[in-house]
Length: 265
Image 1 (cartoon, rainbow, N blue to C red):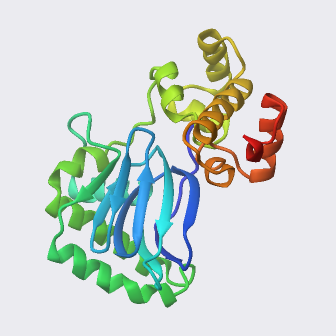
Image 2 (image 1 turned 180 degrees about the vertical axis):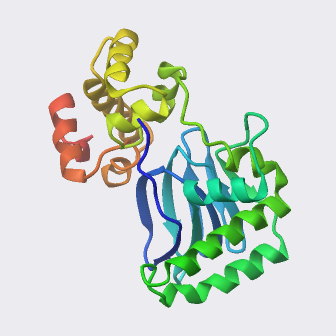
C-alpha cells in the first residue's frame, strides 16, 4: 500500500489555452504560487478558486481536479514546490519537529500572503531554465527553505507536514460516493481508504453489491446523463468531469447504456 518515494522538485505550469488537467493523485504536500490566470481546483467536496498573487498549500494523499484558465490574450502561469517525505523527515530530525496531534485542516488551503513567500517564489522563477537533474542539490535546498518558511508563517501546518502515517481505514461508502468522479485506479482508491486492493474489492462488493469497475461505470454514466439532459451540458464538457479518460470511450459506453449517443440527448 505504501507509495513510491518521490524526489524534491519545483514544477512550473504554463498554458496558453484552457486546460482541464484531469485528475491527479497528490502524493506529496504542495506549496504553490499563482502568477497569472485563474485556477479552479475540485477536491471532491468543494471547488477552490485561485487568482494571481494567491499562495496555496495542498495536503498529500488527496484527489483533485484542476482547470486552468489563461487570462484573455495571456498565459496561465504558476509555480509549485513538491514537499517530498524524505526532505520532511530530514527536517524533522534536524530541527526536532514532530506532529503532536491529528491534523484536521482542509485538504486545500489558501495561505495568508506574506512578503517572505513572495520573495521566495521570485527567487526560484529563474530556476525554470535549470536542469533538475544537474542541479538536484540546489533544488533540494530550495524545497527545505520552502518548508521552513511555511513553518515560520503558518506554524499550524506542523502537524500536517510531519505526520508521516499512511491513510487509515475510513468509511468506504462515504468516500466513494464523494470521489467516484475521479479517474484513478482501484489501487489508488484502496490506498486512500486504508485497504489492500483485495480488501477494498471485498468490502466494496459487500457495501454496493457490485464490482468496483461496474459500479464506477454506471455511477459516472448516470451523472453524465443528468448533466447532459437536465443541465444542458455538452458531452465534450461532461466526460472529463465525470471521470472518463477520452470522449470516444465515453460516447461508446453511454450509447451502450442508454441506446443513444450522448450528442443526441
